Image 1 (cartoon, rainbow, N blue to C red):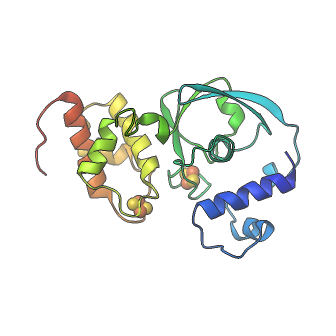
Image 2 (cartoon, rainbow, N blue to C red; image 1 turned 180 degrees about the horizontal axis):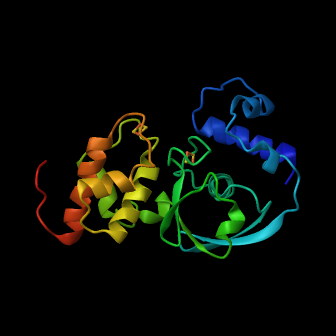
Length: 208
Ligand code: FES
Ligand code: FES
């Protein structure tokens, strides 16, 4: 993958992220964002064929193995539900599951996920295939505001309930602490997780 190709891809991600860098070209956009790990990714490296299973489907990518998994998911697979936020593992917007565990795809080289199973927000559930209990709870509790952080929030919440079907408030706060919401939807996120937990255990929902 060439430097120019990587820069172009980065510019597209910034634009997809709705970042306020309109009018900047790719190189300017790179300079604008000091979180970009330039030394590791502007050096041309040999592309390698890497196989991932994404949402149950096998994909082969001819890619620089150090490319962040997020870029492969969004740019090469076209699954744009996973978002770019900070690029430095601080906001959680890019959360996906690797073999069922939440990871920050913005800082995970694609080679780390080679021959393993990746799940994105598109693989959790859909209107057509049926919504996950977390997704339905998000609708019922009207959790999202702008929505930008919410696919990452949902991926972390799904992982939480997989490991802990009846989380306490402290459990929720701890598990979700790496997912930042600039809109401050945290109280509704907590209610959504409790609603989904109750649904999954088929117990009545108590109003907070
Ligand atoms: S974009 Fe990955 S943690 Fe913020
Ligand atoms: S809903 Fe807007 S950032 Fe979370």
